[in-house]
Length: 121
Image (cartoon, rainbow, N blue to C red; front, side):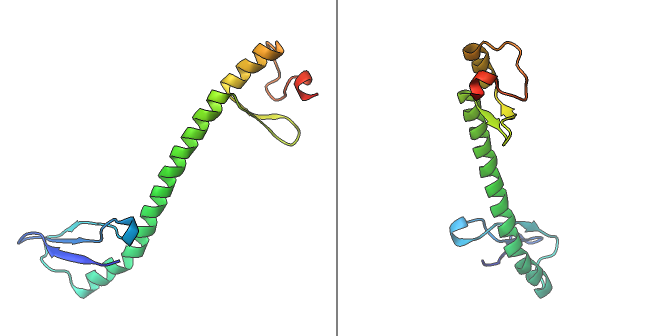
């Protein structure tokens, strides 16, 4: 990952590290009233580079997981899903699954924690 320092205009300096996943780069812009970066400034920016890359990758991974979870949730709702624990108690039931239980097992008011007995047999 490389540090790029450019003069942006006469009164400020642009510094950056660009986002490019293939080359592991991130762009960060800094606009400062001073014209040049000293060696200490460059050292600090270079030390930040790997942390910025990790933060970007984490944010990208989080966004992808959130999208996948949303898709999984939509699919579970569409199919009608019931998740049971080891004791066969209901941990999660979608609205569609509730409708299926009512439709196919003629259960109008069932215990929200248990499946109907005839389904457990």
